[in-house]
Image (cartoon, rainbow, N blue to C red):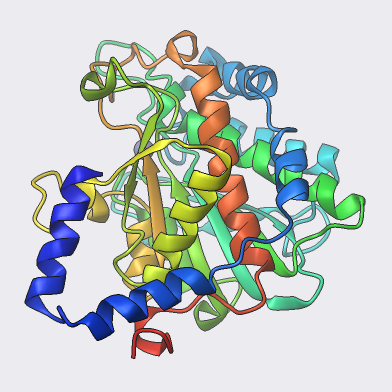
Length: 350
Ligand SMILES: [Zn+2]
């Protein structure tokens, strides 16, 4: 938070430190009217640590063999997600029981077999052509050279099961007459671990036109606590939120401060930050197409990319709270009167 404020101050000095600019920012903030407060909380509360835990123990089990792209364990993981959406009666954008966007082996480098993104979808009631994407990667590293399974419970089992619960919450709302006005695509991406290839394939072969894609909220590791936050676990790193759309950044802040009060830590959002996380998960392929993104991330820990990234180490209460924040942010973007705007077209900033 602190780092971000300092950065913002520099941005003001560097570009447009006029009262007029700060007034415009204030107008932008004031223009954000949160939708359906009571409903948001009611449905957010259907996201529970118990269900997240139950899903995650299955998704990061030995049975899925570390979910290496194109291998049998990854196929099982894709099948698991597909079966979940079928059982929840959440549709695929393709219709019927086809939930897979197949990616041929020829798209990958040599030795990688064909794979698939898994897509589920809730159609918007008023502006179905405008789509909000919530994404997480389903693949992981597989079995290491010592024969140990890399379970990937945090990376990215945590993001995967968060989406399962978020989708269920939106679907429940829809069934009770409170479906989202815009459409929501629940996008489980493959091949992230070999260079974000599943999201690269998606943006090259989008199921909905990219110009109608409003945002990508990407989740990659939200179940753990890093060393920096050992004494303040109520946090999450947000990366990218203000890069293309300040409106997105202020929506995210407003939703959080009204409902959740999580410490939104922006230190990794700094432009020249050495880890360059902004470029390192699937959201970046959307940002490259001028689609505003938020990357939700708990930071690295000793079990990152190790066989020891197991489901018993996940903080399920925290995972629940972070998933609720993402759900409520998506709810706002899906239901607010005006489509979320990139800064270049935002009347308050120009
Ligand atoms: Zn990951």
